[in-house]
Amino acid sequence: MRAVLFFGTLLVSIDAQCATCFSAGGITFVNSAATWPIAREMCVSMGLDLLKITTFAENDLALSLMLAHNTQEGNVWIGLNDFQSEGTFLWADSTNPSYVNWNMGEPNNDGGSEDCGELKRDSPPGAWNDNRCDMMNAFLCSGSAPGPIGANGDPHLSLPHGGRADFRGEHKALYNFLSAKNLALNVMTEMADFELHDANHPRHKDIHGSFLTQAHIVARTGAGKTVRVSFLADKASPSNLGSANGTVDSEPAFFLQKMIKSEKQIDDLILRMDYSSLHVLTPEFEIVVTPLHFRKERNVTGLHHRLDLKIKPRVAEAELAVPPHGVIGQGWDGDGQAVDGEQDAWPASGEFTTYAMAKGAIEGSPNDYKVPTPYATDFKYSRFDATSAEPRNVAKLVAAGELNAPKTVSRADAVGSSEVTDDDM
Image 1 (tube, rainbow, N blue to C red):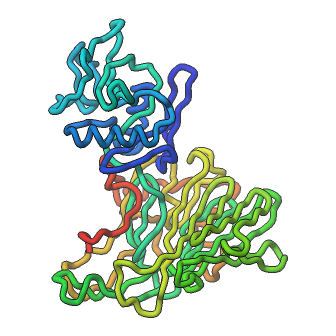
Image 2: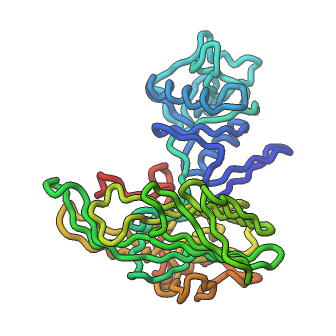
């Protein structure tokens, strides 16, 4: 989601996958200048709120984040305000402060119009001050900024706007995860058995699961060239050095690897390899494919790497040429709502076969997203050649029992990467 807000002639916007956000310990610093009301709206647009500080430790962490990342050279907004009663400062959620750190003589309502609270950069650092609400400051939000959209692990999906789902797939089947105008991302799921925890651990499990092992991208450039590029998990080296192969129309195949050739540009498309990951940048999207050794998963049969994906729009959702589709892409449907799909219910211990296929978060059935070949662009909901298309109709699909009802994302831990934690496993 992208919140776009106006204050006079000033336009301020922020992406749900926030490039100017820095999170630690449940606090997010946003290195973008805004008035207090707009800063609050920007926090809320990410499912957060302006920072509420309840302990000295939280105040100290907020100060550390500000000092590390603030390039605005001033104080930063926190959630304090006295809108309800002059001189009585409450947090943005209307609760009374249980911890205070006002600077000496503050709040003083200097000039009769200081109604919003800020965290001071210096004199002394970390103290609180009241200021005019129309001042332009960076700001702090309670919670962690949303993480990237994509897939990781066994595969856990992070869906647009904060939705989550798991997707087992079928053995060596290909599925479209993103279909946009002139862009398709297809992935292969591959079954594998593995263990979680040591054999003598009380939560030891024998899992029959799956991983993403191939990613295939088809992109058509602004000049009409068709670029096909593949990234295979089994080609990653023991040191996690990644590589990709591709073609441009009927030209000879090319090879990308950090140590040999790390970047190729074809018209408005950029392909770039860092040490491990492939970055594909189109005018509308960035796709990142990363090979990873198995860390939590033990004794994985037949595989030495898996692939994780990140997908980030490079333009505002409303500016996409055609509303995208695919298992993940359909979530950019313009309504800013998070929809969860089916997720595996892990047992405390024992043998378990994953089963979730993101049902409830996807239009139609999982089989509707199958493609026959790595570079196929045509499937039931394809947008690759579309000149126009309607986004999925969430209300209609919910009424039909095809989608789960959207959820309210009010906590940062409900947003972003859905990597299953050790506690979940």
